Length: 453
Image (cartoon, rainbow, N blue to C red):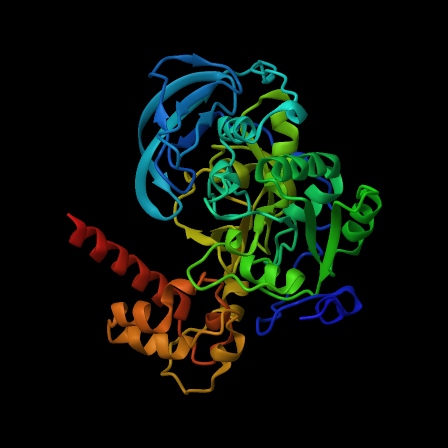
């Protein structure tokens, strides 16, 4: 694909996808504000993809803000740090967003203290080797803040036999309602460029691209002005379309490279990170701090004070809603965005590293968007035309109904589905296709684990 085709009029894109209403106007121009600390913080030991962290504190122990409270359990794991100064109240099972309870540390805060970060060790990143940077990134406890929660140091470790040419900073933020990345790019741009340099140094990449959708003209203008004169970091503009922010979609749109089925971006010379992840790294690494807070968007028709807030990790959902107010007829609470987020049933679920937003929907807004009944597939092919991976969701859905889960995986590329929800969104029959696919994947994983025992 030629350069003119790829960047025609400065707006690249991919085939298929959808255009859901954005609902971003209410928060996209609201500056980031700090949310008050909760009296108690709930710190799940598994806030990332991989092995849970292992506690290094005991009940009754006093900790200060930024102190290590759980260490990484091997390479595919990250440590956990105290988001505030206080005392360890308990270590046990607590509610999670996905339902089952999981081990967590409960921290009771001390009132009246400054909540200053007291742990720091200045680091000169420019003089550090690749391995030293990767270890320093791991020590921060950093994971992908876009929602996947994949350990960042693992992503920076280049597989044997592969070479990274381009670091991509993902600033698409194509999920409706969410404006976290928008505000981070506007308000923490210098931290973002520092984080990009860290990623380039760790992976050996020679250049970087910040990918942004064209519905953020203020961000595009600001970052283009801030880009270095040597051209090592540039801004790539893409058409506003969902799911433009998915790894494979963004790489295809900006570079014309196709990540192979079952492969990772490194297979085509790319290492991709969310802009919030890189911005946090840019702020934390030079001081040797751990990840203890993040910016989230709190929005939806059921919230009284929507906006973008800097929230301490472990803050219970109940506290967020008490601080910002919510309508009495709030019907649905979603961690993340409406397309790929997780519906939660308990207000004791905390904000974790991978939570980019809290969405509060009312009964009225839910009734407009969710069909009351599921009808049989009418073979209209809307889902086929929407799927950005070019799968056949209709066929996969019918196989799921027959519980042909292995066939879905082996013959119809089920695992290439990244659960964007496009198929469910466009289905006129109201079939919850993406939910079927999640169930199928889970059952296949369980069957493999059972067979391995």
